[in-house]
Length: 220
Length: 144
Image (cartoon, each protein chain N blue to C red):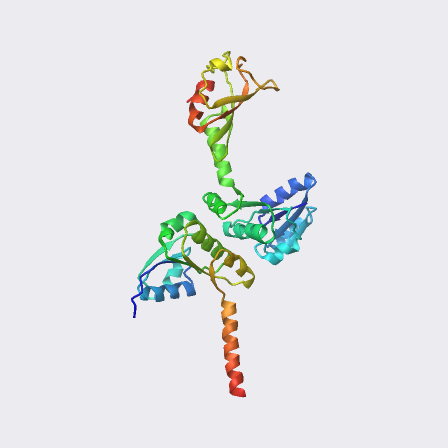
């Protein structure tokens, strides 16, 4: 099984390096001949000089349906055609598409692509979380935003310290899945009291997210 | 003769083909909007053109919305890049449900993909070939 990286420069180089170090088989396709020569000496990957948005070039990579392709060029339109050629013509089922314009995430999904990634969206998501509250370290939504999983830390002075989970008054639709306490993982019952520095993994509905965070951390 | 209805036509890419089409269609009484990333390209629009010009990148959905693409009866994807034309036509067809989409495609190898999405295509090389064969046939007939 191989992973084909189409286009892109630095990100492709480091991605290839990481994947190769995990023992994966990597193929790099790039239009720029100089770039290809440059990385050929440094990476143990098959390097193809050519335009990945042309079927002939993709065919040179001898791709099978179970292989993976990642479209990493700086142009959304190029990534679209690379992904669709891979999916529709070559029948690949693991196709990853990078987009620059975050609005294209939805657009490309409508055009039948499943794994559309926007660096801007990922970065802004992380920044927003860190800026809004350092107690909450990770928020991810599942099932198209119908459920949220968040990771938070009980800091000194939190109103929930020494209270049992069942006495916190957590809203319906919120559940504490795990507590990490001094590197030990606890799957809690309702009568377990929270302690300072506990790290919680909480699952909740978006409608009760704010209330849940307030009950646990005391913050709005 | 039956009077034809006036269409709202969005032309993406205002090069030689885009600007001339804009003039002709405008002259026929259609409302035409042209979209291009380069302001200089608008200079080639003929005097018959009476529509609007929008400066922007057609691969940004915002810009397409600004050009009121969802109201367009027809979109002509005439930039000089096949991949850009491919994206614009597909977005027009699948996301904004534009009925008629015509794209210029330089590389015949890409035609299949366009046709999969019911996008009509114009390939200059194939047109030139057709014309060459026609001229060639005519010459051969004269020779005989």
